[in-house]
Length: 119
Image (cartoon, rainbow, N blue to C red):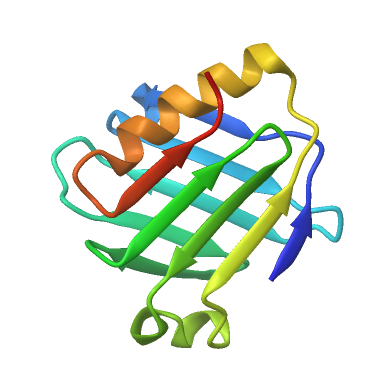
């Protein structure tokens, strides 16, 4: 699934949501994509449009200066119409990218693989 967004909403510790870390965006066509994790859970919640899955392995996320790529296992993809790859192009500023990177590191710590090309 290819998506485009102007920016991400991200928060390493949302106090209103029981300290959940989240990174999300609305695509240019209004689709919602969200990665979230509560600090006491060993799984990442992935929401696309109105569907949510809970992933505890077989997850790869790559962040670059212009793209966020999220890859999930085919066995987890049924609620998303069997989509296994979400590629989100963005225009996030360098300062915001560093904060997004830090948030993604929290969300993905110990679950799946995180590759960051943002320093």
